Amino acid sequence: MNANLRRANLDHCNLPDTDFTGADLDGTSMQGATFDSRTRWPRSHSPQTAIAAGAVEVIPTAPATSADPVGVAEE
Image 1 (cartoon, helix red, strand yellow):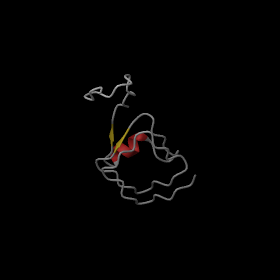
Image 2 (image 1 turned 120 degrees about the horizontal axis):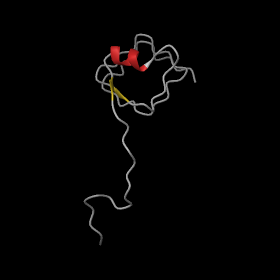
Image 3 (image 1 turned 30 degrees about the vertical axis):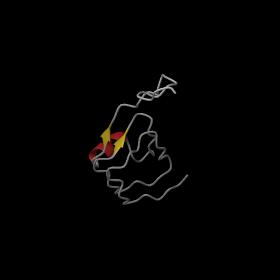
């Protein structure tokens, strides 16, 4: 994987669990983008670099524990 995302606009994107391994993120804009601990970064781009570019780290969402969706009545 060698995505060229140099100077890409990732503003306000949802990036949790995204694999950027091997991507070139040099100069990428991330204002208001969100990422979590599952997001994988290339060696040249750490979570701190993403925060400096305007991204916000969020807590990963746990999977639903119920088989029945909330608010859905059985027929």
